[in-house]
Image 1 (tube, each protein chain N blue to C red):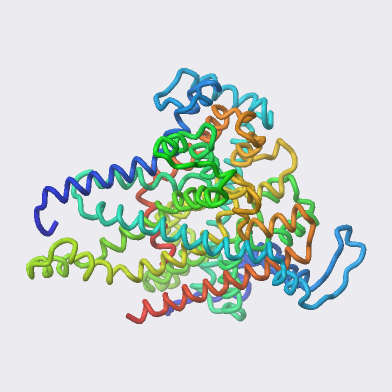
Image 2: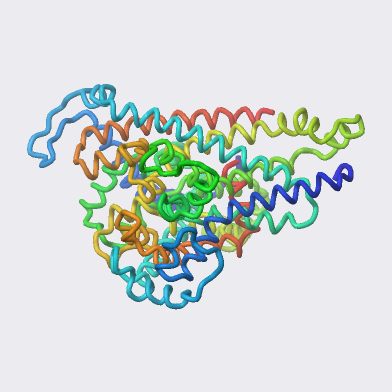
Length: 292
Length: 282
């Protein structure tokens, strides 16, 4: 809290005005519209609109495609978080250990952060394309039957890999920052007491890293839920046979392509509730961390 | 370094090298494919050493696009992407630094309300409110305009919070001294706050430039004319579906062009970027 303040009747309003204007027009108004439309039933030509209370939500609950997409999204986000976090943690732990060359590894590992999600989807599509992908070729040489048009689980794996790959840089940087903030004296004391590297990692480093890990877990789940539309659309279009149609893709397909305004708006509202819940969880945790 | 363990050091390097190889592989393969002829990319397995078609492929996509998918040249798309990334980065930084300044250095009615309204935007990514946001933009006749492409993405809670956090760490004496010297708030902002925020601005610039350059869903919705496409959208339009019809060498050349500017920004400004990223989330 600042002790010294400036005084002006109009200036602060003028300063917040641009941000407020953009926020009201492009955030609050659309969010309000989403809630309103989710309670309406409208045909494609908008000839008739009727108020249907929660029918759109009930329809969603009874729509097997939507429920499938829900479980699919959960599976997808857990896989992305687990793969992205564990690979990044291993790399960060070893990068924190070494003295020479750490800078070069770090620079190279940051690269995926700069790659657009859609481009990441296309790159992995190219690597894993059944007919000509180089990684598919290696997999087939190892005896793996790789063809995601035939095995829908493999299509999910394709987008999981692309999504986790893109997130590795981010996780790596946060784990590295977390590792570097662990006091050296603790590690040294344990070493003097005869604890080996593995023991030190398990009993000291890992517990002290848990706030970072928890924060990253939430961020990764939010990322997998909401920032992966481009990967899915560029790599698989939600197919084959809906096997990669995660929730954000479903909203887009139902709203923009199928023209189901009420259904799409209801899905938007469900997604908003999920984001808000996840954000609250995250801030609860931030508050706790401050109290330490 | 707690103790010397040469074996563990060797293992560390081995694991890091393996990690880097896996992480870089997709980018490397794209780079190689962009130097091959179409027939060479269709060979199984594709060769992993550079071919001779680098200049031809890049010339082809920049000037003519891909003849199989969309035949739009990539050159104007790069310009569109650059405009979008720069406007979003500068726009976000400008409006956020102003509102953070107001919220930290003034007490005024509704201040708390404004703060919370900005905070809530953190929770509503475009993906979640696709359709209604698109409707607003089309009612305002902003489809296929640079304004429509950039303005809705310009409000940023992240940047506002980062600046707010930073302003709170600035010593009170600065503002006191400025007031005693009779400086107006805006003079104080321009001569003291802005120069001190240089590092934060640099860090945010990297993050927001990448955010803007890499946008996909939004340009997909608000651009209908070829002349408004961004590079990332262009790549997708070059893949008509099905392996055979795709000119992978040209798609990969475009992918390389799409990756290059953000990579240059991230690696060139790595120091600020890493600090900004880790700070902005805390």
